Amino acid sequence: MLLLTFAVVLLLAVLVSALAKRTILSTAVLFLVAGFLVGPDTTGIVDVHADAPIVGTLAELALFAVLFTDGMRVGWADLRSAWKLPGRALGWGLPLTLVVTAVAAHYVAGLGWAESLLIGAILAPTDPVFASALVGNDKVPARLRHLLNVESGVNDGLALPFVIVFLAVAAGSEDLHLGELAVEVSLGIVVGVVIPVAAILLERTRFFAASTAYEPLNGLAIGLLVLGVSQATHANLFLAAFSAGITVATFGPRQRAAFEHFGENIAELFKLAALLVFGALISLEFLGEISWVGWVFAFLAIFVARPVALWVSFLGSGLDLREQAAAMWFGPKGFASVVYGLLVLESGITAADEIFHLVALTIVLSIVLHSSTDVVVARGFDDETDTPAWHGVLRRRIAAVRGR
Image 1 (spheres, rainbow, N blue to C red):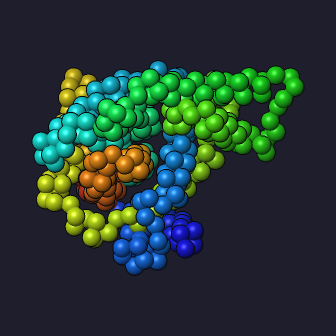
Image 2 (image 1 turned 180 degrees about the vertical axis):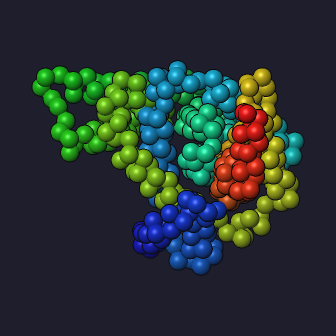
């Protein structure tokens, strides 16, 4: 039933996608709500539970695909060309968001510091999918769109090491093996760099060449090989994926261009499937288990943590107030946070269930709030739409008089 449900919701999402692009309707919310409606604690049409093998497998594959395509969007050349504002958001905004969220989790939700820092790392990444009307609107200043695109493309991967480390710390000293963790992380980066470079160099030799029809599959083959080798060597899958994407973008611009559209579609399918499953894990009973303190924490995570962090990050940046406010608001907690939350739930740490409840609540509120306001905020940058016609005529006449 899960496959049938996904197919039906996917077809519906395709049919309403044009409408969603110009209204507050969101295809991501559609999958989340559909999952909620068919979940085991609502209608029971789909019997999916957090400990089901499909949940872990889907989360793992989806995050791998997303990190691989995210990395491919941000080669070193892209970062060097316009790094100033994204650099502030990533270098200052990401860690400050993590810290402010952790402080709220500790002092408001009552979690220990290890668990608080873990939930801060989980909720630090942002997702441009839930602000697509803003990112894809030509009326929105290019530097703001570039800022949000680069930031959301990189911060999933940058938050990952913090999630890994804080999860290990939260698991307790008896399970904390820093040496093994360091090997796993290092090996993931090595696999993610060596395999794409070798594949790209092989294609450049006179013995091999990809046909036009097979060029998009080159990136897929590299990604699958990185995934397979990482699993076989126990390297960190997600760091390997992110490193591989950046490596392809840096050393194989042709391979990147051929795979880009195809890869984004694959990643999007995985994202939507994971959102459907995530929604199925949420129910009214689930939300009712969260105390008022948890709701206060979610409010602070959305309305305080990122705005405060980016306000500090953009001091002296020259970004005008309207653009700054848009960037501060559009830090939706999206797909990466969903999967990191599922990974914590699977980890079996003492506070896993409490952390997952807080993360799930924050993500659900964020998806609803951010995906329903992106069109409204984007229209705020369209002066021609927001300004009455008579005002434009009057302004042109005044300019004409002044020019005489």
